[in-house]
Image (cartoon, rainbow, N blue to C red):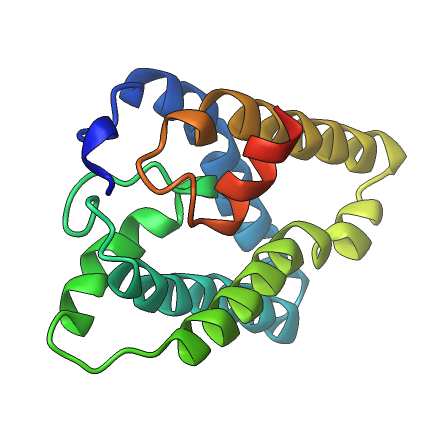
Length: 165
């Protein structure tokens, strides 16, 4: 089913697009650490939830990227492809997949939206810059990465990208 795109052929483009957003995530984590323990913990928990829930989704779909380079959005699902190896011999269900995919996608949106209030405290220019970078990243990711991913027909992001582009 997924054999036409293995391995992911646009690794350099993926890294050029993703490394800056990963750096921004790291800067936000550091800023939230300075802001307060609770915002820092909430933000880190969003990342952990996305990674753990996505790992189940990877295993459920028998994603060909499990244990290998994964062109996941935001760079955070690279860890999911490794953790998915732990789900290899467990019973999986479509109901769990749909639940985990929905929660994971919501948490992914939370990763972008949650720090807005705190970023706003840095000034309107910083907030607008963050939003422009996040929107630019999402558009370019969906346009340039998703169409070439092996699971574009089953991944929620891939389905959205397929309909839009």
